[in-house]
Amino acid sequence: QVAVKFLRFYNYFMPDVEDSGDASTALIRRSRSKTAEPISILMLGPVTNLARALQDGLDASGVSHIYLMGGEMTGKQLDLNFRSDRAGARTVIESNIPKTIMTIQTCGQTAVTETFVDMLDCPSMAACALLPKMRQQIKLMPKYVNQAVKKRLLGVPERSRGWRASPNLDHGFIPWDIVALLSITHPDEFDEWEYHRVKFPPCSAGEEEPCDETMQIVENLGSYFHGSNWSEIVRTPHVVRNETKLLEMMFSLMGEIPAASPQPHLSWGLYNSFLSFGIATIIFCWYLFRQLR
Image 1 (spheres, rainbow, N blue to C red):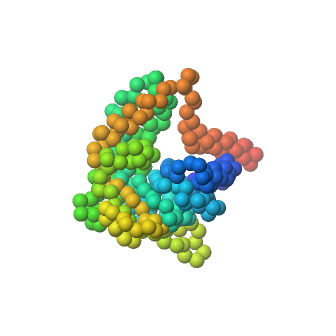
Image 2 (image 1 turned 90 degrees about the vertical axis):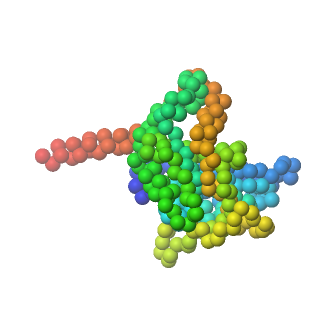
Image 3 (image 1 turned 135 degrees about the vertical axis):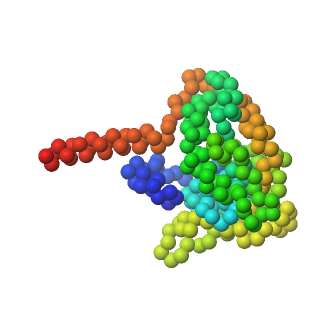
C-alpha cells in the first residue's frame, strides 16, 4: 500500500516493477547459516523485505541487531519509510531482536547546504553524479519537507531540553540515510541514547494501513534496558553532538568512492514521468478538441 495518496494515483498509471521475494529469501538463508556470525541489518527504506522474512521463518538468533531509518517520537504522522509499510514496520518492531531506529527528530538535526556540496572534489568522486539531485533537494526540501520537520523538533513538552533543529533546515536537505549509517559506524557522535517501548495503533474496522499513520511511545525506559524480550523495544539517539563534524564525516565517506568513467546517467525520478504524462495529456486534449469541433 503506497503511503502517499498522490503517489498511489501516480502508481495506478505507471506501476512499479513486479514484487520479488529474493531479498527476504536471502535474509532467511543467511540467518539460518550455522557457519557464519550473526548479522546486523540496516534498512534505509520501507521494511517490507525484512518483515516478510520474519513472517516466513527468519531465524532471530542469526540476527544480532536491526537498524531502521524511520520513526517519529511525538505521535504525529510517521516518516515516509514507516508509512509506506506500517504493517511491516509493526512486524519488525514486534520481533524479539535488538533494534535501533533513526527518527525524524534525530535526522532533522543535520542538513546539507550548498556550502557542503561545493566541497565535493568533482569530478573525481562517485558522489559527483548526484550533484544535480543534491542541488534539486537543496531547493525543494526547505519548502516541502523541512518546515514540517522543524515543527516536530521545536517546543516539544515531552522532553526537558527538546531536540536541536538544524539551523540549516531553511536552506538545505536532510541526509536521512547517511545519518542512519553514521549512527552505526560512529555512535559516539550521537548522544542521549534511550530505550523506548513503542506501538503502532491497530486500524479500525474497515480501515487499511497506514490508517492513522502514527507510532506511539508507550514507555520511556531510560538509558539502559536489562530485559531479554526485545518485542516493541527500540533504542534511539536523541541528539547529534556536532552537526558540522557529522557532515564532514559524511563527505569523507563519500570521498572514498572514486568516480566511474563515464559517470552514470542520473534519473530525475518523477519529473521525467510527470513531463511525459503532461505532454500526453495536452496532446489528448488537443485531439479531443479537434474531434469535437
